[in-house]
Image (tube, rainbow over all chains, first blue to last red; front, side, top):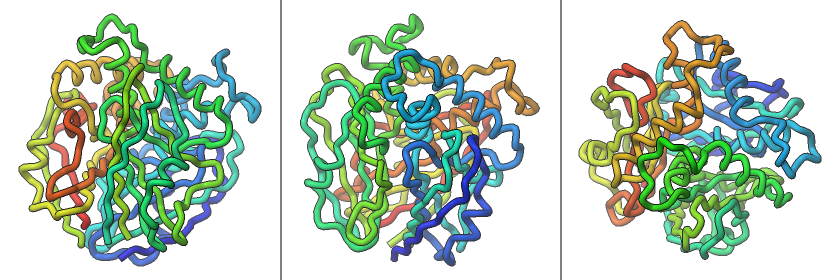
Length: 136
Length: 136
Length: 136
């Protein structure tokens, strides 16, 4: 069985944001066993699963990815949308634009330290849309 | 319900290539709601979803990933298949070797700017095989 | 149809480890056609598909990712769990914490050179738990 919904997230500032509770509040009732697939319909934001307890982990993500994908490479060709745009595309494909999470016993079966991150790579990305597909 | 097919892509030159239309032309009829999973059966090419409008975005992908994963690190041990081989393996695991895309209303439900990229990391990678699995 | 199981992997040392045979030995009987989804319930280890033949490829993964995500950036804020911890979180989101592999003709339908890697990013990560979900 497949159920599907679209979720619009509020605008987040550039950075990495824990959205587990926000997502859970918008999910339909979960099946006993299955998978939830979250797909972000954008090319300058990403979604991943990572540490849910210490907010400085998300700060360090922002710092490390900014070093890894510089905004100031002289060789960039795609510059018309701002210096944060092309690095945002690169980061989106490094982090990925979907996650698939198992459902067990009617709940997301993640590790105790795992949470869902929205990764907002643009300075002003605005609200973001996700497609949620649950299969069981 | 699950349907599956294998697709052989033509050889692409090293770089990032928009293959959305090529893939759509080879997909069977899509269900009303579901997921399509594309899996590339190679360890030196990848598949991702990113910007579909400006070809210079794909040029910048090539440039940035070549800086990020250098071909000339003196510490490489796996060198027998050429200087582009080991970096290709690394890039394949950074980008990923599969994508899962929601199907809604009988179509791929991607954002307006999203397209499917074949990421060819070898200088001469040859044709590449994908397994397409559609579940609904 | 969905079937699910949890697998506990033995502790591996820091690095990249081929676990294809170990995983296959723990999978239930596979359906004729489907997908197997492997999800690691940790934020400092990852799972990917890459080259299965030459062990030096895995050594080079360790070397390159250590250069890409340094342990010694002065700007890290999340340092209380050791210098290998924050880089481990970053690497986990670069590599990813799940893989989805097609099943065809009752077997994992991977390329001839593809194997499943456990990526252990901690110096002493201990045993790791995976959720395996098979749908058909």
